[in-house]
Structures are given as structure tokens and as C-alpha cells.
Image (cartoon, rainbow, N blue to C red; front, side, top):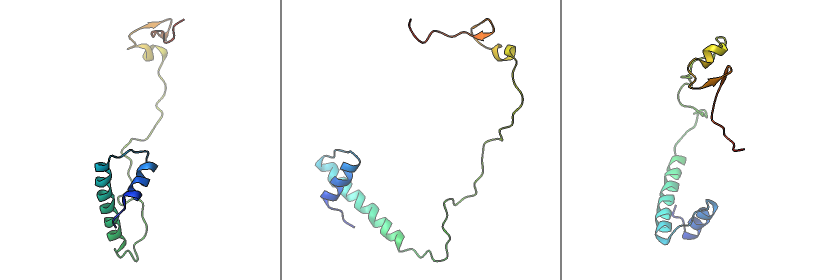
Length: 96
């Protein structure tokens, strides 16, 4: 399906892209090729094939989130580079 320059310019405007004449011609060819491939896919017989959103089994690679208790104040501050009065001490963020 060959696109016209006007159609490519319209798509470029929607995407807020400024295309030079060379880019416009290149995009016209590439977008036309993409639409040709889509047309080929539409010819595939999918009768009896159920719709699917995932072709592989869904498995989580993350471990289960299991609460294991809490840290004491001393444990939480053990590796702190700077602490004062049982709290983390950090540089001031705002100038006063």
C-alpha cells in the first residue's frame, strides 16, 4: 500500500515531527512497507484460533513478598555513615 507524501506529512504532524524532504521520502517508503506486511498478515487463516494476549505461560520471577519482622533502631542505624540522637543525619536540602 503506497502512501502519499500528504499522508506521511499528516502522520508526522500527529507525532509532532518535522521531516526534511529526504526524511519524508524515506518514511513514506518505510511506512508503506509496514502496511504491506500488515496486509500480508491479514491474509492468514486464523479460523478456530482463540484470541490470546500472552503466548507463553505467565510466571513471576520475583519472590513472594513475605513480612519477616522489623529492625530495631540500632540495627537500622548500624551502617549509617552519620547518625545523631538515634536518627540518620543528612546534609540540609534547603537553604535557610
